[in-house]
Length: 448
Image (cartoon, rainbow, N blue to C red; front, top):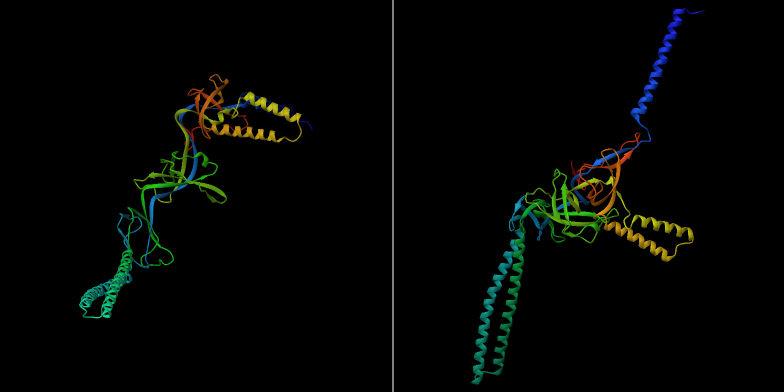
């Protein structure tokens, strides 16, 4: 069955329109790909301007705050804690009464010892009178013997009585001294029942409660801690990998969780040589003091500590990703020559290395490591790629000073505002994230 002519023409015209649209879409896609998408082999460079700011090379660690001067106030006598005169946070002066222990027993002992002392003192008066009588009797017997009015036996008896009276007097005097010593002990124990502050400071903790019985026979119980909060000590735990970078009088600052970015500055006072081992990690304690006049810093606060190994202010800064450093020692050509000589030596000698060769290799490794350590934060050469205004790139030698993980100080070779290449990517790859503008500790604060 044949279609009508009008319908046949209609289908032909419709197919033509569709073909024309498809052709136009193909042409548009090719144009967009060639004009807008670019070639997949093209490289897109990421540039960063040379800025001016401050930079620090830091050693980081964590620490805790402790009062520099504090005393754990304890009890020297046993008994019931009768009265606490202070609370946690109370400001006290040296000599202020802090607490009282029930002193009934100690007061009774003092009274008994004093009564015994008064009794012995009365006995002493009696002994002194007996001694005086014995001296008079002995003198009388000696006079009578000279007149042959008494016997020698009577004189000897009088002499013996005199010596006995003298001995009894000395014995009683020794007993009195012993009793006086006992009285001082009992009086001291009575005084120990009243506990006074040994220093000016703040009561930071109370570990015993009113009414609690304290027993000093086994150990001296701690009642409270009094601390001078005007000066705090930061005890920092530094890993063994970083402890060698620290030194006494090294500048340091720290922040706390609630300080909102505030920094407290100080200098390292002492580094303890004996480490602490926590979970097989060796940590060394570095301590320094900081004034605390406003009492903002509290005991046991956690701190983030930054030891300033080196720093520079108002200098030119570029990202570390823009730098290419030379070998840590020697010239690059010399290094290539040594590497070539070494390869030739390896091909010529396939046997095991001798002891002399091993010693030489070890010496070279030590030199490389020492050179890298010494030049870690000293001026050293590097190469950067500078993007010009016309889009061309230029390799330029620069002199680098202080560096950290993000930025580097440029001493020579660049001008502020010049753009350096910090990375590159393909169009179908994600562009690298630039490391500029980071303001955290250990990172330079760039200014545009």
